[in-house]
Every structure is written in C-alpha cells, then in structure tokens.
View 1 (spheres, rainbow, N blue to C red):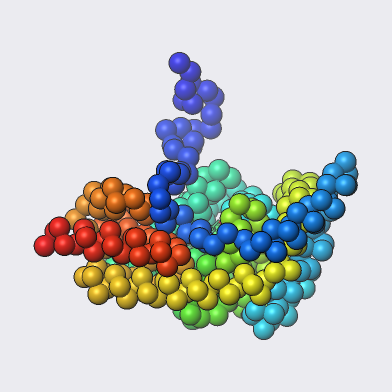
View 2: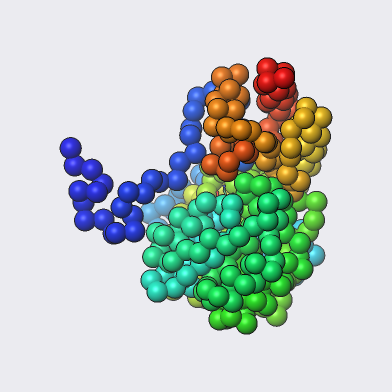
Length: 367
Ligand code: PMP
C-alpha cells in the first residue's frame, strides 16, 4: 500500500498528522468551541433569498474584492469597537485560518520565522509549516499568562518576522492585557521590524474590549477575526482582518483570484444583517461560560479565568483517561494534549448541565 511517505512530499511534512479534532457522534458535543445555537429561522430565510439572487449570476466569477461584504464587516467593527474602520482596512477570506495563511504567505515563508506563545491555537504553527515558515515556540507562565520578560527576550533573540498573540487565548481562555500586546509590538519592531497578528477569534465573548483601535498608527499590527464563533456560523467559513490599508494591499499579492465564492459572500451579508439577534446569543453564552467557571470551581476543579466561549479545567493526573470518562457519559470535550487539563466549550444550558453532571459524578468516584 502506498502511503504519504512513499510520495515525494516536502521533508517538513513527513511523519506529520493533519489537524483533527475528533468528530464523534455523541449526544453532547462541546469540543470545538462552536456556537451551540442554530441560526434563527428568519436569518435562514434571508440567506436562502440572498443565495437565490447570487445563484442567478453563478455563471460569472464573484466580486474578487468582496467590496459589499468588506464594507459591512467594516461597519460591524466600527459599531462594536467605537473605532472607525473602512473598506480599505478590512480583508476577508474563507475562515480566519485562510486569513492567517494569507498573512504567513505574505510576511512569512521560506527563510522566515514566526513565534507564538504556547499552549495556543495549534493551527498557527501548522499554517507556518504549510507555508514553509519556521516556527518558534515561545514560553508562557505556569498560569498560562504570557511571561512578558521571557517573551521579549525570545523576540530579541530570534528576531521573528511574525509574532502571534491570541487573545482571548485558545485553549486556555485567558485574555492578554493590552499593555502586554503593546510591549510585544514594541519588542517586535525593535528586533526586526515584524508583523504582529492579534488573533481575536473569541473577542466578542470577552469581558474586555477589542484591540482593534491599536491598528491606528501601527501599520505592522493586524487584528484577525471570524464569523465562526460569535456569529454562530462556523459552517460558513468566513474570517476577516482589520489593519492598515497597506496590509490589505499586501495580502492581495498572495490571495487566489475569486477566493470568496458568491454564495459565501451572499450568506455572510445575510448574517451581518442579523448582527443584533446573533449577538444576543453571545450574551447568553457569556452567562453560561461564567456559570461553568463557577460550578466547576464549586465541584472542586481548577479553572483558568475565561474570556472566551470555553473553559479550561483540571487538574487531572491523566487527562486522557478523564476525557474518556466524560465521553463515556455522552459528553465530548477536548483534550488538547496539555498535561493535566481539558477544555469544554459553553453549550446550551441543557448541554452544560449534562457536562456538569458528568464531571461532578467523576469527582465523586475519585473521592
Ligand atoms: N483562531 C483561533 C484562536 C481559533 O480558535 C480558531 C478556531 N478554532 C480560528 C482562529 C479559526 O477559525 P475559523 O477558520 O473558523 O475562522
């Protein structure tokens, strides 16, 4: 049988595994930080309407520059951050994963390096590998905050071309203070200068505010966002960034022509028309996230402070065994391979109850 390694694949891909959160058929799935609420029916209707219109022109390529969509995303960002951004500041792609890939194709690549402070979102290093960008794993403190002195030292030593800051961080859930992001930006500019990508995939769930206003006067700072979480539209595949207009011009050097299909653009525009309704679900999820933190603590678990729609909890002598025992009770959570810890996404109140019952029962068995 011919396998991957029998093919002339690039050396850095040999022996590696693809990204793969298990997609198991269990009653309660709280493992991929999805929004548990299906899109409301009036929005489903509006999507069907806009897609029907788009279908009439599918013989033509879509708007290559996604002007209407980027204009509406800019409006959403302006309305929610209080910082005025326009079409020229915003770029969109198929999920923020593709945004990040385009950024690394533009600012990373062979002979260049990127740094992230781990544990963090594993796709940053995987996309670095896929784009031939060298990866540097920066440190974190024991409590998963960024150790600023150590981070500044690593930046000065390695002089990376790209610096990733994920806030709120995945999988740990904690936000990075704005002063830390600014200090990392200064350190990165002093060392190279390099691009700083602030991954705000979960920012709508945060107690704090978006760092979007920091792009003013900082052309090497990019804020990356997604409709997969707060908008409850992971299946849509729509991510976007906000930055200086020069960054938007630069990523167009690597984007594939017509990368955002007309169907995607129509669907995303319909969802943006319903922003107000969708953001109400965010408020419910934030309350459920806070309940998970409180109840997990009350049940005797350690919990990392969360600004996201998920919670990292522990500690377990063997997190994989704990993961399996929760699964045996019909609840799928995430084992990110961080020794002693597991991650649970905030679901509906009923799903969270099922999860809490499972972990309380597990605690009882242990004592
Ligand atoms: N950034 C972070 C920190 C994430 O956790 C995720 C999704 N798990 C993404 C980016 C990618 O999201 P998407 O491609 O769906 O926009």
